[in-house]
Amino acid sequence: MIDNFSIALTHGLLLIAAWRLIHRDDLDVEDPPERDKEPAGFLKRPASNGSRPDA
Image (tube, rainbow, N blue to C red; front, side, top):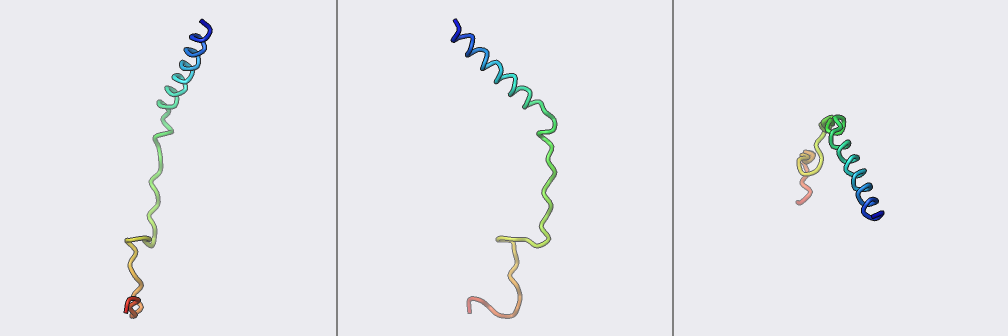
């Protein structure tokens, strides 16, 4: 009897905690990231200094 009560109590408390977290409005609000002034990675344009690195 005590085992069933302790399992029901802990699962009930976890359910209440999850329910309260799901229904918070501030968790779904996020500012978009700022755009980079100079792109990096694959979209970055090579420097045009007149010389070719592969030649």
